[in-house]
Length: 287
Figure 1: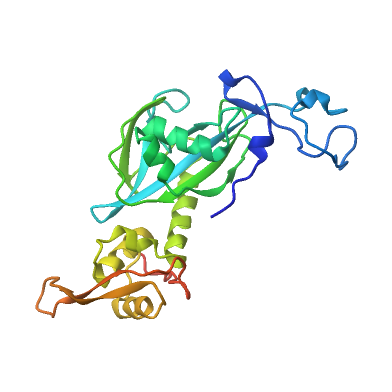
Figure 2: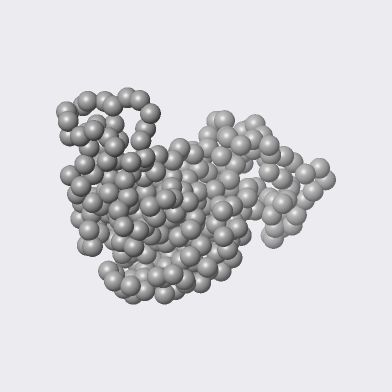
C-alpha cells in the first residue's frame, strides 16, 4: 500500500468555508532558489523569515474514491450523482475537498460516508489504497484543484444512498457507467488497472468467494475483475502450485452441474502475498 504523502498536512490553509488550500514550497522560500531551511518546523508561516504565503496562488486539494465490489457475478463501481454545479446531474466518483486540519486519508473516509450513506464504521474499516495524484491545471472548471485518488476492491458492501452534495449514490456495473464528471473516467480506468494488479499479487480474490469454494468459483472472480476468459487447467495448476494461496477442505466436494464428478472444495490459505504472482493473460478479453 502506498504511504500517504504529508504535503497536504504541511500545507498552509486558507478560509475553511472555501475548501481551498494554500500551498507553497515546504523547505524553500523566496529568499533563494533551493535554499533549504533547517531547524524545528514552525506552525506560523509569518515567523519564517522571508516567507509570505500570499506570494503563492491558492489552489484546492480534494480526494476522489474509486470503490469496486463484485455483485451477482459482475464488477460494480460506487458512483454518486452530483447535486451541485459544476456537472450537476452527472455521475461521478465520491469525493470532495480536504478540510484545513485533516489528512487526505481522513478526508477520503469522511467524504465516502457523507456522500454514499455508508456508516462511519464501514468507511473506517475499508482498506483504501492511494492510487495517484491528479493535477492537470484545467481538470476542474472552478479553480486549480489537485486531487489525491484512492481505490479499493471490497466484498459485501451495503446499498448506498446519496448524502451531502450527492443527490444519489448507487452501485453501477463497471463499463456501463457512461461518461463521468471531471477527469473521473481517467481515475476510474487507472483504479481498475490497480485492483486487477492486486489480484495478481495477493489472495484478495478469495474474499469474494464463500468460506468453502471451488476453483471454478475462484476463477469466476478473476474473470469478472480482469474481464478475461481464463484457461481452466492452467488456472488450476497455477493456484494449486502457489504456496499458501488455498487449502483443500478434507472430504469436501460440491456438485457443480453436468455429469462430472463433484468439484473439490478449498478455503483461503494463509499467504498474504502470492509467490509467484498469478499474472493476467493478455489478448483474451471477454468483452
